Amino acid sequence: MLGELVTLATTKVSSYKSTDSNVDDALQYYHPQMISDVTRININGKIRKEQNTYEDLKEQLSNLARNELTTVHNITVSDIFVQAKDVGIIRFTDTYEHKYKGKLMQKGTQLVTATAKKQKEGWRILYMSIVEVENEKLLSICPCQLFEGQGSEDDFVTKTTIPQGTTTKDIMESFVFRNNQKHRYIRAGEDIFTWTAKNDVWTINGEGAKLHKVGKAESKAEAIQLILQKKYTENCINIVINN
Image (cartoon, rainbow, N blue to C red; front, side, top):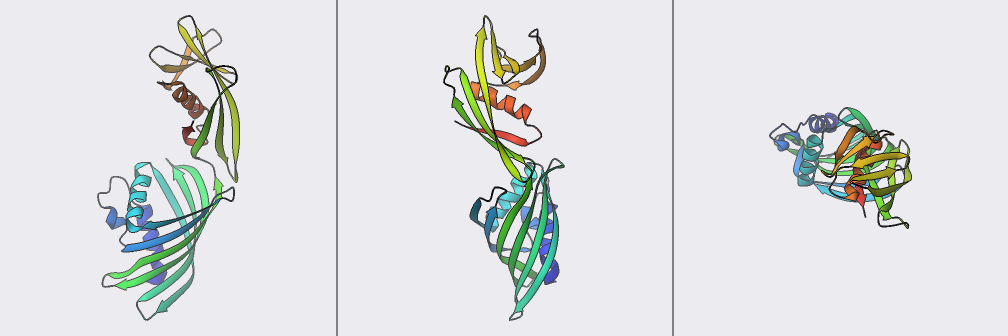
C-alpha cells in the first residue's frame, strides 16, 4: 500500500474539478496536519523556497481547478522504508506536465521524500520534502514593466518577459498615443490601433477602418496590456503590468 500511496494521492488531486463540492475528498490521502517544504528551481536557475500546509494545498487545488489548469503525472517510486510499523518513508520522482485549457504550459520534475503515518483508515502523508525543477515552460503569466518614454507623457516603453521553452526572453517595445481631431490612435511598433470614445481598442487597416475589436481599456496602461495580450496569446495566459 505504501508504494501505491503517492500515486493514489497524486491521481486523486489531479482528477479534482472545480464542480466537485468536497476538496477534502480530493486530499483524503494527506493528513490534516500535513506540511510540505518545497524548493523550486525555475528555467533561469532562480531558487525559491516555500512551506505549505494542508490548508494551503486546499486553496491551491481550488485555484488550479477554477482556472482550468490540469496536470499529468508520471511517478516512479525508488525507495520505501518502514519504521516501527506505522511510519513510512517513500522516495519518488514525479515527471509532470501542466496544461492550460488542454494546451501544454510547463514540463518539470519533482524529487520527493514523503513521510506517511498509519491511521485507522490507512496510510496518510504527514510530511513532504520536495525539490521541483522546471524543465520547460511554454505558457505562463507574463510580467511586464511599463516606463514613460522620453518624448512626452504619451510615449511609453515596455519590457515583457515571455517563456521560450528552456529559457525566457525580455522584449522591449514602444507605444505612442496620439489624438487626431476626434480620434485617438495607438502606435505599437509597426501596428496602429484606434481607441474610441467608448474606450474600445480596435485594429485598423491602412485607411483607418476598424477591423477587429481587441477589448475595452479605461486607461493607457490597460490599452497597452490588451495589445500585448493579443500579441503574445501563444506565450502568456495573462500580462501583468508593473509600473
